Image (tube, rainbow, N blue to C red; front, side, top):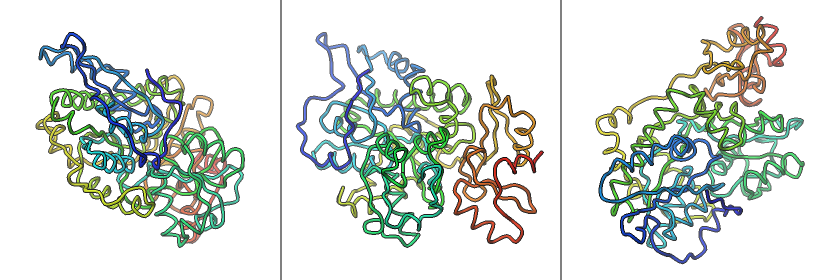
Length: 448
């Protein structure tokens, strides 16, 4: 597997590139075709088009069933962000790539600029409220709301959906994202180190960084991106010339993606373990996002509400001078995934995410336990503390799944309610007489 030691920023995509021959090229015998797939192993909402798909071997099996006179080989190339995938695609070196919604727009803009157009051909993981992005602070930070960020240093990655969440959230809170804070453009790993080292006050990032840092005890949530109530997603992009020249190969990829999606939905624990082994991420963190009731829903269909959100994202990138106008309608092309999914596609377009639920992952278990209410989960945890691997609860207002021991708990007459961020918990408590925030230990005691 080829790995890139340096991850380009979105701004670097605006620099000139020299094009070269297509990636899906025939070998010397004229019958061997190499298909190059760019993916992000640790951006775990792309796993059905990357890490999980690769581990299952479904794409290779689909290619083997084409029987068109060619022998196919797949070159999987792993990157830290979507930016270098776009750079390689527009240089003709990658055929199919997966990335988040904001990088997808830069992919579209860069492809058009260079005369190497790309197309959004399917979706991997999405959250209809925006819960894939989170703003976190250090565990001991006194910061409790977005307005507390005024004059503070905040790390994010320019051109990413996490940056879009930060900009939108600050604007809604009445904080100028350009002048009200000192915003640093850093890769996720760099920003995570900066937060731990105290050189920044907060970090706005995409999966799996916020959950990972919270799980490790290196951060706590300040803002749940789902409060924006605007969809965020990851998707698959393909070079237009590749799609037109080898539509059967692209359809084979999308059929394989659909198979990987079905596998993830049917075997969420095993899928999390597979991704964990390939990425060195804790399986408990992978499951937070990709589990049965995780933050992300996996479905290849290009849903209208996701396309609508993509159009709204353009203005954020324009304001940051990362792109100009983008014709989203010409970028989106679901013809191939429609054909790949066949009669299942119309149903997939209207399918709703599974309802939020509380879950416990017992040590040694191959499946998780679901509970109707967070209080029921707490009661179970209180009686089985030594045997719990992870416990997850949905935010009472947004439905975003979070670790039970990292959530902010509110006790009121209706029971025990979890929240991802302190501001929403305090707002709920203020609006409900008699309600008050309590510690996790207190919540366990009350539930037992």
